[in-house]
Length: 74
Image (cartoon, rainbow, N blue to C red):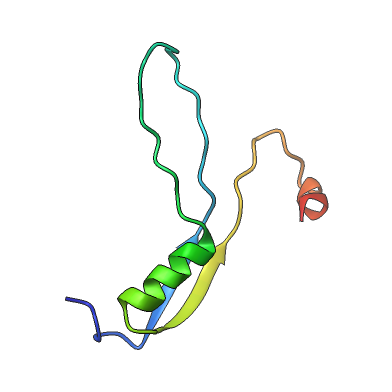
């Protein structure tokens, strides 16, 4: 119902978090998240080429990462 009802598409995108199962004998199917390029292509085709604004994009860091470390990771 939203096709053709908006002037633009605003998107917040972040990386997929990884985790480990506490019980290694458990079976769990992990789905893979799409990359930003794949997501933008899907939105473009699904919603008839809207203007897309990426309003947030980033990465997650552990609590031990120092504030200045981000400039080296960039």
